[in-house]
Image (cartoon, rainbow, N blue to C red; front, side, top):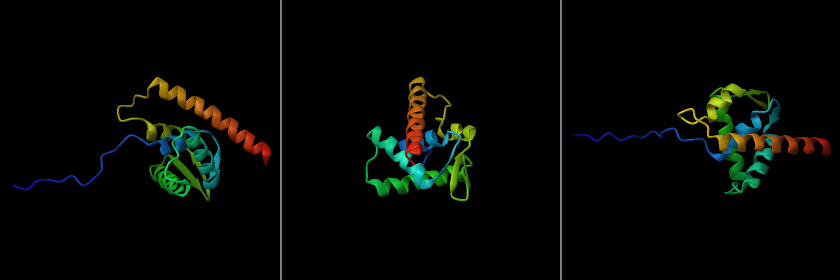
Length: 125
């Protein structure tokens, strides 16, 4: 009797890099990858979740971003990326569709902090 071996990965919950990408792209702005990565990296460092070195994190973020583009949650125009809010919500939602209130509150607070950081960065340029 042959034993069937499962070679494919099951869908896991989104990781912190994907969560931060979705949080930043949920705003109604377009970003080039460098600008997007700088914001995501700063947010991950603030959460003490940027491990493995900056270059490895850059590669992971780019891979996650391309996966979001392939799934239709992000639109790429030239070198700019823009999130599609309804598709991003589905991309980050858990399997059962339930987002805990604490996670939603943390996401809204994080989005406010991101907006302040982006405004400060734009003011310095």
